[in-house]
Amino acid sequence: MAIDHILFNNQSWYSIAGNADNATANGKKYYAVPSKITIKEGTYITYPIQGATRADVTGQLQEDLEVECVGANDNHYFFVGFIKVPSIYYDFEEGEGYGVGEVLKSDCKNIVW
Image (cartoon, rainbow, N blue to C red):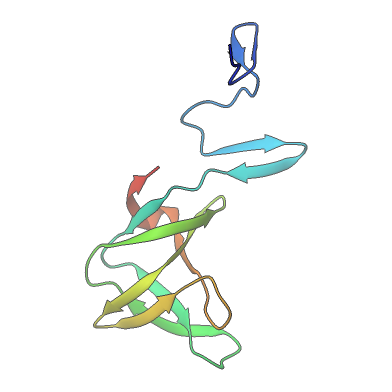
């Protein structure tokens, strides 16, 4: 007989609700990260220019865009993906010379866990 989880008083060892988007442990807050998000049409995306010291180019999405989510905090999702629309042409990636994108959670829909 294998034990795949620990129950105490008929509850999971970690009392985190199945629909929680964050949890605090040892004074640190951890966030659930969905696998995919859809950034809404009309959202402004700021992205860096190679060799620049700050991100200062902004374009507006002309259609909804599904991307891979790689992180989260209180108000934002962080994503990777290639964006090629009339006002934006950028490859958000996790790697040297690239950067991940950041978008407000309120500018997203169709969150895929």
